[in-house]
Length: 182
Image 1: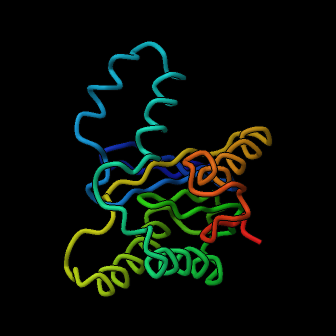
Image 2 (image 1 turned 60 degrees about the vertical axis):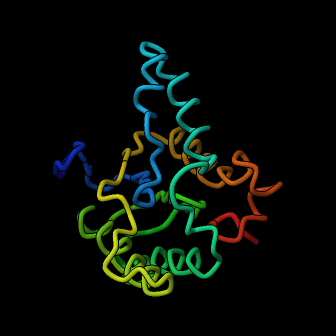
């Protein structure tokens, strides 16, 4: 298997012909002290994940510009546009108040893919918000390549159920900015 690699703050692997689960957040949306809080659960990765997920999905600190329907639509259009351009195939996506999850099959290198979605959406969103020239997204994206069918099914369910788990809607198909919508 051929595997592209690049490194920013985190290592990123892009195996050829593999589905990738990618998450990125609004700039400034990571709560201060989260890392220290998670250290309480050192040695308990499942508990760390559950606690971090609850804190991050609550969107209780930092910007939540994606709550604005115009901004969420800008991001959704950027995600769909990359697929229309043949850069990737979309398996699932969701735009949350302060972050985005996508599950996709990339046909171009990940840095090109994420900079395209994030760059286009940031320019349009900042223009709409009157924040031209300001950071919109965190620089780093978090990615995980899907290793088998079970992971694929779980990742898709996780993404589409994220708004339900965060208390934003009753059913996945009720969330307007998601691949699960009706």
